[in-house]
Length: 133
Image (tube, rainbow, N blue to C red):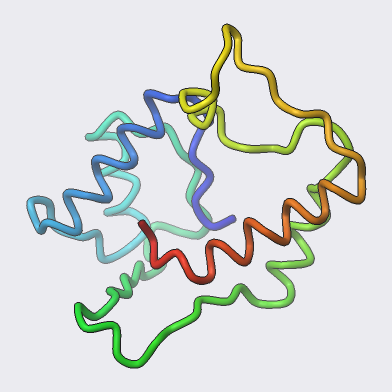
């Protein structure tokens, strides 16, 4: 993962708000990793970012008319790396997902190795067509 957001609900909220500010152009999009790290700090986002401060950061925006239809696919290396993290037990969702679950504390399903792999495939498929929102 190129940006690793520390997993707690407030941190994910801060990250989501920063992303929305970039979309709405109320904050300047960072041009490099150093700029990104400064914005993360300024917006109380605790995250690790890969690469030196001089590494460029590039944004890709979906067109409003969505022509042509774009399907985002990770590289095979990214897919293989992600699938290595899929193990039996609770699927590793960010903890902010707990907000949408019922129960105190929310209970996560304990998945078999096979179902965990299937769940990962579903999430990868969902991401490829979700258009970021």
